[in-house]
Image (cartoon, rainbow over all chains, first blue to last red; front, side):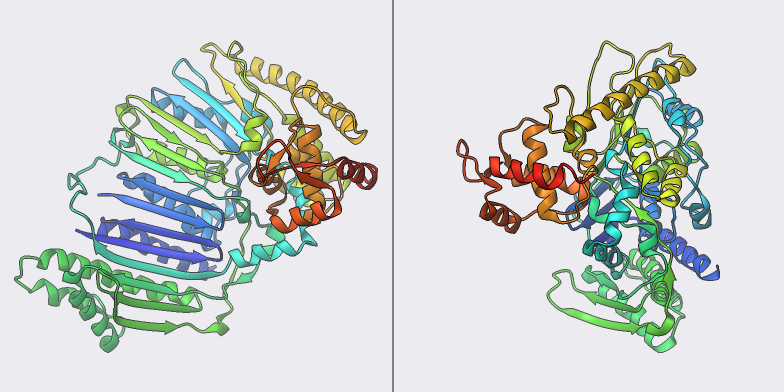
Length: 42
Length: 541
């Protein structure tokens, strides 16, 4: 079963997200993308 | 299915291990919003919220009764940005309580002097940490095999979180997260990279194909899915799913890339011994993308343990609380919930020392609420009205810990009771502060070091260290202290950590000395140090 690990680092803050739920990971990333787009649109 | 979140900072670590999608989604949304600086309401004011209930519906009721301000949802970042948590003191006390629910609400004493601290730190070199926090340095996506012991029983009912067999969240952040809005607004992302590591050998080729297609066909990554779906291999379905997701991920990464200065996407085998493919895409540094971030986050620790009969949730982030309850309200089948316990607390040694407990009373613990008033007064006196109003408007309150157990509590009466106690405690605190300034010994519960320190106009760590050493001996009545102990006082109050250089300097000046009764790792303030403290600091304020 695959594991997805998503890591972000911002300054001293490091975020790592891992899951075997590919669909969920995809949904999260897609949602974040949309949020970034919203942010851009503002 | 499992969902893990790990967040590390310089002095803390956040780990979420869950099989619950809702919990994970909520946490990730919040931290995404936090990291990307699109949320304005990640201002931590609550030090402890503890809810114990046998019925999650009670928690839902708590939300309504507590009126934790305007709800915001990280699902919609615009709402997050506009959302304000307008907790007032009365709101705090008006927490829901019935025969099945116990609520403990604790504010962050460390936040009390936030306004003043902001002023002090504005001229402090340590403020550079704030800007550093806003630099997105790396985003990494990995894919690897999961050990076989992972459960595949997966059709979970995410509508009922308390039926999960296991959910565990550990959260630790710290004062190093502390930033101030006026210092971090409009900061650009200086450096960022996105990495994708595919550690599953079976998927490497697949991913490479996706990457190759990406190279040759640009953005049309999804085309790779069709190719893969035609494969009759036994593993095709999984690979196809992965490719599909990775295709989307790649697409998403490209978008995220546009938000950052650089993106690094690469694949590795499962041993991570060599990089199979590396694709680097560098964004336009001239984009000058700016973020408005208001972060006053001071999360000490969050823990969630979720079993059939227990959920523990530790945190001190007010917006998180909003979202937790929103999540419960919107996503959970509350009626099916049988037993639950939610505990939201921040583990802070200094604060816990100030907790007073009387199990025989309805109100178990109330302390230091007056400190907020003190701080507000200090802030007002310092002409920090803007920040002070902001903090207050965001629901800043200063209940050290309030616990309501009585099954028949009349909340309006409770408010009056608490208000009276607050008034009394405020008077006591003022008296104590006067005594502190005069060097008098104080009996009974001591004031928090943060509050104690606020009485002195000092910015240098060595001075704060000496004041803390004095505080430990004369307020806490401890003959000696370890570096760990004194830093547990200094750090929450100042965001700084004393190291051996401070010890050496103070010892060189004769202000502190090795404590003779203990090992070499214990120190105590000397008489000379106390005299220095008295002569230099006592008359400053």
